[in-house]
Image (cartoon, rainbow, N blue to C red; front, side, top):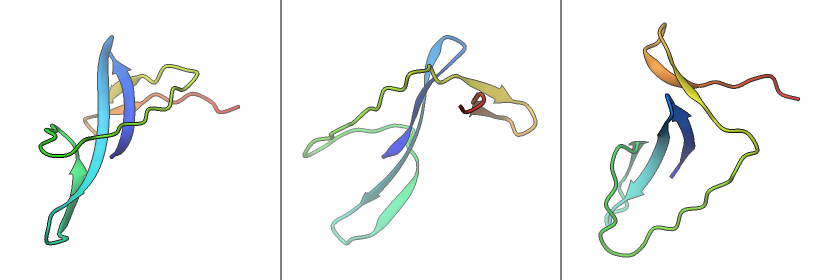
Length: 72
């Protein structure tokens, strides 16, 4: 699983991707919309960044995008 935990309009806005496999070694991946851990466990590592990540709707493409400022 990889992605970002950002804010949009004052609410948490996670954007996650995941890859999962089964006993036959078939693998699927894509956007993670919901997750239920059945057997086993889930370990999650979060990196805290110095600045708060914000998302806003980009009308031209109809999706929420990270608002990234100048680097440096």
